[in-house]
Image (cartoon, rainbow, N blue to C red):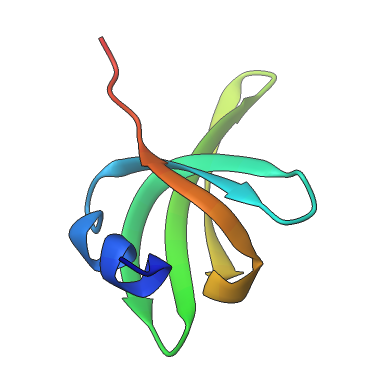
Amino acid sequence: MGFDQKAMKLIGKKVEVKMYNGLIISGTMSHCNKGYICFITNYKTQDQEKTTIRRLALKDITSMVEVTRK
C-alpha cells in the first residue's frame, strides 16, 4: 500500500508523520490531493493556543501512523 492510499484512509484522524529530514509532525489530517496532504495542527504559546495548517508532500514522508490518545 502506498502513502497516497494510506493517507486516504487516515483523513479526519489524528496522525503522526515522520519526514525524510527527521521532522515529526502530529495533527489532524484534513485532506489529500495532487501528491500533498494537509494537517491541522494546534500548539500552545504562553497563554494562547494557535491553529495552523501544514501542507506536506507525500514524497518527503517516511512513515504515517494513526495516534491513539487516552
